[in-house]
Structure formats: C-alpha cells, structure tokens
Image 1 (tube, rainbow, N blue to C red):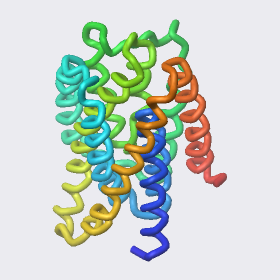
Image 2 (tube, helix red, strand yellow):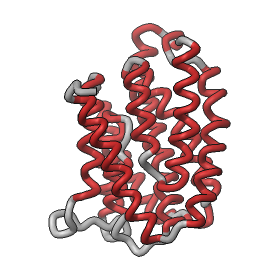
Image 3 (cartoon, rainbow, N blue to C red):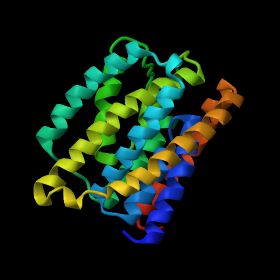
Image 4 (cartoon, rainbow, N blue to C red):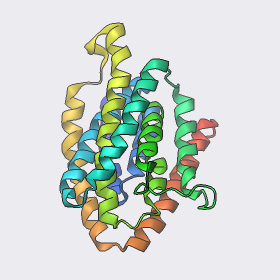
Length: 248
C-alpha cells in the first residue's frame, strides 16, 4: 500500500468519523466509497469494518447513558438470522455492485411514510431491522440509511438515536469483518489481510473525529438533525450511483 493511499485513507477516516459523530451515519458511506476506489473489495470491507467497530464503539461509549438496550437486544436477534443466511449463501459483490448498493441504500431515506412506516420501537421492527441491516451492511459495506428509516420517525432524542445506532453498528461491522476475512485467510493466510499498522494509525483518528462530531451534535436541535441527515445522505448516494454507472 503506497504512502499517498495511506495518507488519503487516514484523512478520510478523520473527516468521515467527524460526520458520523454528528449524524450517526453518512460518514461510513463516504469512507466505503473511498476505500472501494483505492483497494480491492475484500480489503475495503475489512478495513472499513475494523475502523467502524472502534468508531461506533467509541461513539456508543460517549453516549452510553442514552442507549436503548431493549431495542439492541431485539435487533441482535434479527442480526443472528441474517448472519446464518449470509454464510449459507456465501455471495460477495464486486466493486461496481458495491457502488450501486451504496447509492440505492442512501435513497431509502426519502421513502414516504405511507409506503414504509417504520419505527424500531414497535413490535417486531427491531428484529426486522437487525435482519435487513445486517444483510445489507455485510454485502454492501454500509447500511446506515436503511437503519435510519427505523429511527427517523421514533420519538427518541438525537442522542438516543446516535447512541443506539452506534451499538447496533458495532455488531454489524464485526460480522462484516469476519465474513470478508474468512475467504481471504482460507485462500492465502493472514498475510493478505490489511496491515495492522494502518488500523493502529486510523483508530485514534476515528476517536478524534467522533469526539469533535459529538460537540457539534450537542449544539444541534432534533429537527435540524433529522433534516440535514436526509440531504447529506442523498448527496452522497448520488455520487455513489454516478460511480456505479462509470461516470466518475
């Protein structure tokens, strides 16, 4: 991995974790898009997942008092079912498919309530979120916009939304790392995994970005939080679709 590539990745980690520190999402989509451009898909998934585990874990720690653990436990049940299905199918997308899935996923935030009326606090919806989000996160690398559909219409505060989403994403990204690492290790051993020193350098930056984003979150209102979240994610999705079409 060249020095310019490493530099781009580390700067991207700082910027995207800052964004995610504010909105609990969006940064992961950007980071996944950059990774898919610079390194093979499997490496992109492993790097992204490893850093997101620490980024989301630190965000969950910062806002731990606001985590809805009942929602998380139900989410984990659905996630377990998705894991079993994914390992049974063992399908992994190529680069263009990753861009397409990222782009389409971001557009989900605009689905009208009359078509999809989701609320993760309702009966069985946390389990459904766990299944669908885990499946998409594992094959596309990111599922924040889909997860957001289950949170945006709840009566939870912005702090509770960010905290609870963070802890669910620790689980989601851990599964993703295992799913994509297994074939790499089975084919050629651990030597072909991304270098440990890249993770060691990225983790402190992810914690810094998360902390700085948290300060901005505190100054926002719940209304502004939910409004800006949609527009930012949509802009990112448009870029991903252009890349999938080969126009960027």
